[in-house]
Image 1 (tube, rainbow, N blue to C red):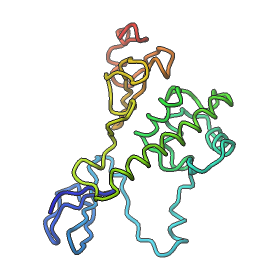
Image 2 (image 1 turned 90 degrees about the vertical axis):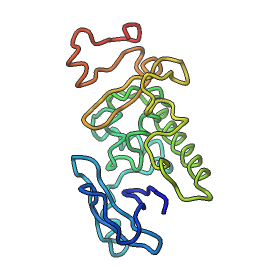
Image 3 (image 1 turned 135 degrees about the horizontal axis):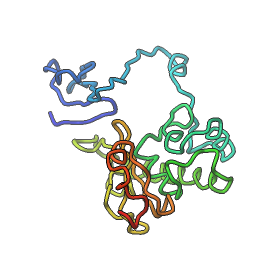
Image 4 (image 1 turned 90 degrees about the horizontal axis):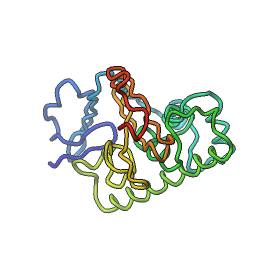
Length: 226
């Protein structure tokens, strides 16, 4: 059978076939193949739960707001309960639901806000802009992906954090579609955050925890120094 990726694993085995080494966590057999639930990350954060009924399912809900339906006021209150960077708070499922790393980059670019800004630093207009950008970006990509997979199951390479048409995520050193400035990145642990220094940070190049420490004084502080 052909390879198909699904959320949390891959449908790429004949029933009863050998699973992919150390990264396989579980396998569920279906009539036309086996769903192998895998985790490639070294941090081993994946978890599997057997749920019986809506009450048990609700108990696993981290409680984040649905950005596509919540009011601007509820959005603002949720983000300002703690003083964290916008990047961190947008990817926290206890605050907002279903955004994650890739779409938080796209939302912050659309809102013209730095990923390093703190929630306490945003005024009412900036918070409203962020809320609207989140709704617009998610609505756009929900529509795009529904249309793309309306008549077929996702195939090899379809389930990915990188999409053709993204403004900044996964586009390091490529031109920003708005201003043409090379997209920059911040590497933290096993993730990468992308942003446009002209559209989002006023020309400032944000420090990368690993590379900026290595380069020290040679680390560029602005677009002109790149």
